[in-house]
Image (cartoon, rainbow, N blue to C red; front, side, top):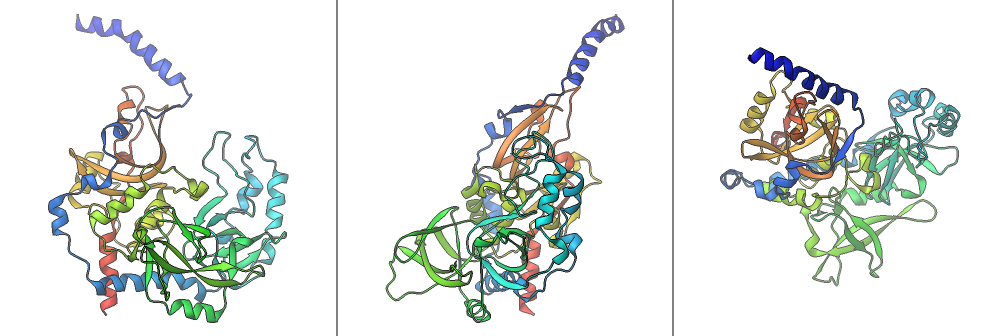
Length: 455
């Protein structure tokens, strides 16, 4: 009798399977259980007992972290142009073989991308070797154009010619120039690529010496702080992830904080100016690595839109992580895989089952300090809630149920099971927990930096 019922139901199962398999169209949804049920407040998940057990960071330890960060930040001014052209101009092969799609959502011709390649005059690299500083927050591009390139017609927001956003005040080495002279090629401590020439200024050795002699730095504790000059005119937006040398003036406004920045002159040189912002929007750099402070940093970015490679001056997953830990004096690479490997303490999780991974993470990861990595994506573990590991991350979407694109769209707090509700018997996709490959505890990296400073 039971066998007969099963056989009678078989055509229905087959029909469901057939319809599911044949439906290839991706369905976007913003109705995501995690976002509907989890408080989007990173401080909500702080374990009070664990917070009490967190050791206070001594002033001399903060000095060690600042020293290490600044050495890495300014190290590019001691470098020479990287001679490995295949590494620097990694985009070249695809310009000749895979032109992709443009902003008009039609295929680019090989002639179009070949013309862009020609403007790079790679055969003449390096044509420059000049110390400079970014004077206006700008895009770092793989090619000397602001035009996008998508791998497929519906490839937005993944502009494959976008490398990174780079903040004003970042030291760089200018190594090359395009045929139009509109673009220069730069190397920095974390990214190579093309920037618009008007967004950099050349800095002299005497200016560098004066800058390196500055000992007090500050960092914004809010994202997008309006900064003005001495006459109250808008100059720039200060962002989480930026640092500025603190300035002293003779008649300060007690409500404001003052710092140095470098502005581009018409001839391409730079001049030092004193800028200011509301005092309560900045703190001394670096901040101590305390869960409540890191949670506050995360909260300043919760709900912000996703920006592949910093497009739209937004953040992708690795920029989100990098900018958080800049505030705490931990200098990280730009790439997600490099970030999880950077502290030389990465733990390989690939051999574990999903259940074992989550149990291991909850038992061993330090909340607000541990990075979780899967191929192409990096996340920050912030603790556990109702038995599940929680992460803060900047993500575009997660595919589940084969055809459902769960639109996260930016900086969110989720579990590692986000979108699980759309997985079914016949249509199942791996979840974030299934794809986690490694984890790295940045508290160990920070302690190693502190210990090194004591030697």
